[in-house]
Image (tube, rainbow, N blue to C red; front, top):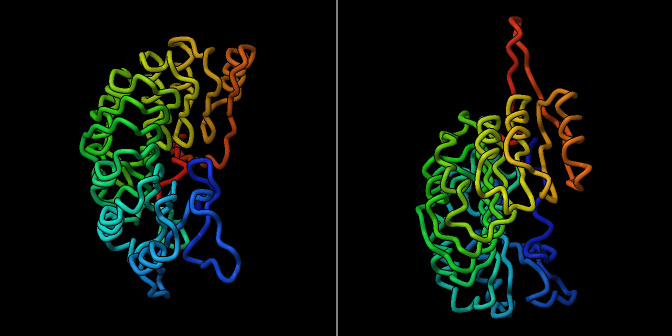
Length: 318
């Protein structure tokens, strides 16, 4: 699987690509869309900062509620330091900003594992009223522990999430967080976390309002599922997402053998390596209780050696 399309919605608002220009038509109301700002790609020398300056000049930024940062200059070679500096310099002009996604970059522009990132927590410190924050790309990503009192949704999309980032998120004080989505990825592209790194998240001690937990796209999905089976945070969840990884019968059996999951509204296990008997067991256990279950194999691909060894793959790696 590759990320082939840009975000279409953020903060419940349709994404409007400012970089493609408003033209002669009447532009949307500033607070009615999530504005997408992108710089040039390989054959376009229009810089991100140049586009952002034009955006600030043409749009009433005091009413802007959501921003999507697309391709910046040489994202395959350097992190978004200039982007972050520009946003922080303009923070007084963005008092209504509540949602920000950094790195809405598709594979035709730059593969997810090639996207260079940096320490992104300055944006959270600089925008204390932010309610949603997302970032794509794990190379060079830094996320030291922090406190943010307003953040309700945090999304980190990678083909390989460094353990230090997992630990930083896990150690953060996020009392308002309701939705956490981590793409843990594969060691082929930098993932080196262990289940023990997730323990502060699974305990729920720092996340009293968490209702949606996604720990997905992981090559250790069986181990994650086994840890989730007894995790205190699960009792308060509405949505549990262990999709996009290498989940097999071992992990699913551990999950079913743990605490009841019948209180969930949704269990997402799509892109999996489950046998049909396990799929049916999950359905029989949860669907009568009203749990929506996604067991779609999706594009889960497996290689089998001559000796019978089966190799599983995460949905998003490179």
